[in-house]
Amino acid sequence: MSPTPWQTRPGTAARPTSPSCWTRSGGVIGQARFLLLSDLGSPCTTTELARRHHMSASTVSYHLLRLHRVGLLHRTREGSKVYYQRTEQADRLVECHGHRVAALARPAREPARLTAAE
Image 1 (cartoon, rainbow, N blue to C red):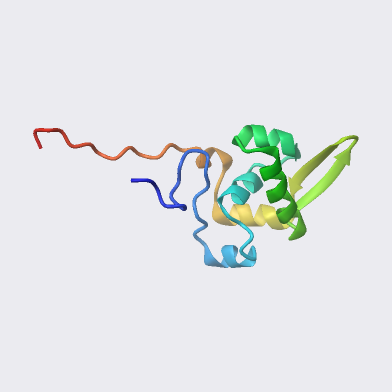
Image 2 (cartoon, rainbow, N blue to C red; image 1 turned 60 degrees about the vertical axis):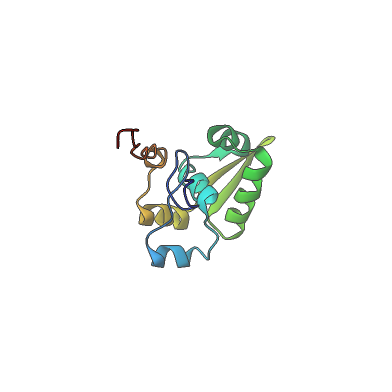
C-alpha cells in the first residue's frame, strides 16, 4: 500500500498540523515547497537545492518563484548566481510547524509482515 500524499516519507515534509499557520500561508505551501523552505535558513542557489533534494532545477525554480511572489523568500544576485533565503515571515511559518530539516528525512516504518504459519 503506498502512502497518502501527506504521509511522511524519507525526504518529504509532513502535512502542516496547525490550521492557523497553514491558512496564513495562503495555500501556497505544499510538500515540496515546505521542504525547500525548511532548507533555506541560509542562502542557497537553485542548483544547490535541486541537487540536495533530488529535483530538477526547473522544478525548484518554479517553486522558488511562487514562494518569492508571496513574500516568503528574499533573492540576492551575486554575479551570475541568484541566492534565495527565507524571510522572517517564512521563518515563523517553518517554526510554527516545528519542523527541522533533519526531522524531514526520518525513514518511514516498515509494516509488520505475516509469515506462512500465521
